[in-house]
Amino acid sequence: MSDPKLQRADGCSVFFSLIIGIILVSAYFLFQVYFNEENNVESQSMISDQRSKKIMEFKNDSNIFESKIINFHNEKNSSLESAMQKVTESYRPKPNKDQ
Image (cartoon, rainbow, N blue to C red; front, side):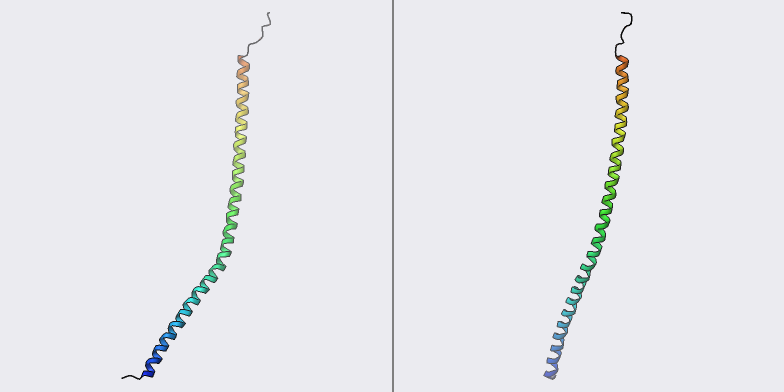
């Protein structure tokens, strides 16, 4: 038979190997979580800056487009108004000078 001291030593080495393995794996995941949080803060601030720039560009474009539409409608309405005034003036009865 084999020596019992060697069997105990083999069991202890497996147990300690498992404990060390668990500690190393948990340390790996803890470091990964820590470094990912640090990168997320920087990337999220960059993303929010880019989003705010795009939002401001969109608002500027929207305001420019709205002002163009308002100007177009003002021009068309004023030309329509002047055309309608000409039509009403043409149909307005003219006073007779003979009477």
